[in-house]
Image: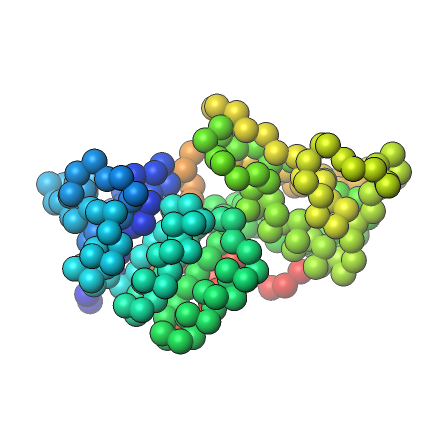
Length: 267
């Protein structure tokens, strides 16, 4: 069987480099090209081999020259939004781990996926444990009126709150069917503690030494429930990325969230 050919967008970044390593090690997959804003060279060496693949900031050139099956994107939102139409016009399936998209951005991705008959998977988090944390939080949301989220990431992460934290809060509110209650001391005030999503306050921490961590804390009289996920290194995201690369070829249209690929039922 012909291997799944992959181009990595954002290949110089920390996540991009992990994707290159993971895809190149995966049986039945191969990296055929790479894209980044300012590549140091015009080729990229595949880890563990002498193979070199085209590397450029010109995404149209890389995609038309390599004709991959899938592009994996871990760049930044602005770069992703510019890249998606280019990839769609070439009939290329997309796996996107970049965060910071608006509902309008996702609507446009859905439109492009239908127009060009491609698959697009967009996920705020590719760590399987993080997806399960979000799923369990949706279940717990039905039974608690108060909740807050603490998310901690490395100091190079520019967006805050994280896409995972925002997605978790929105999923919790949807599952509950109404906003969460606010602590009495904060009602009617403008909080400086973090961003609020329908009564859920999200606290963002950015420090060197961290990778990605999130804790959802539920409270009611006399008890609390904590659902926590810790990321030790970026390798933990790769099984989810590999799964998405395989599944996107079978799923035309837009798929949002890794939970759809894991067959997790709605909470």
